[in-house]
Length: 308
Image 1 (cartoon, rainbow, N blue to C red):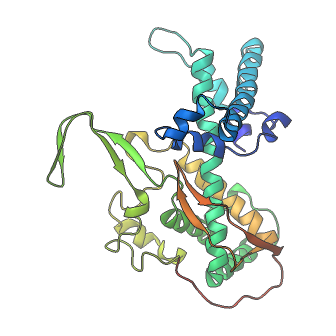
Image 2: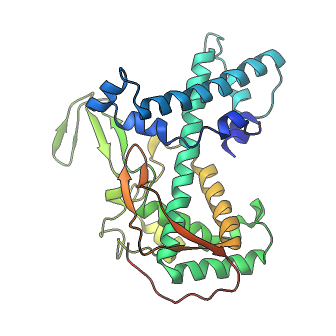
Image 3: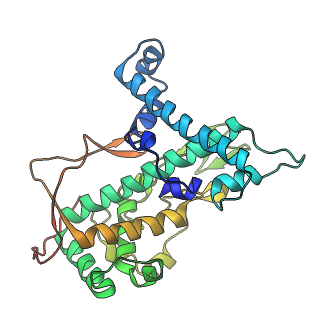
């Protein structure tokens, strides 16, 4: 989906074979550690994996840029928009600039939505009542057919599941900002140039704004609740001028994919497996999430809810 949106292209075999983008995120997560320093000189497995992933991405993206420049056609995708963009002096973007923008968007667009869906299925597997309500909505609205864009207004509970998932397990668990001017926050003086870290993970679990904050309760997201929620009490996509550019697309994508997968499959947690959040640049499940996959049809579940 990301490749189609950014490049209006199918996923080439070389990119599909690279695996996920975790190698890129791991490399940046360890950028200040001694292992990152040593890895730049020693051919460690992680360093080799990172180089392989980035080499595959570069070959794919630079190849598309060259192909699109040679063809000169507007393909109606983000790459075409960036190729047509000009600065105040009438200059376009260079190939390295295009590569940097597209690589960032591709890595961010892949990892964050995949993580949100992974955490959603994990939470549903731990909360049979919520999973049953999701199943009931999908049966009522879709009746077994694939969801369409036009169905989104009726998939209210499905969207609430996504929102509640990103409250408890926001893929972007910390967000950085830099003070432009000297200022004061909560009685603390902040000098211009200071880097500040804001954590949706912490704020989303604030009992002043969320009743029973540790519980997975998609039903809390009523219109009335959303309206009375203070600004930035909930900000999984960041906020201000640098809010995530793909927030609306990500919500649409996650809601539709959740509906598609949950119609066909029921995913049950394995008691023998413990899932531990791992705060890298994004909020990864350490050692993965293991779920039992079964047909989604005709299996009753107990009305039990667990606190995560």
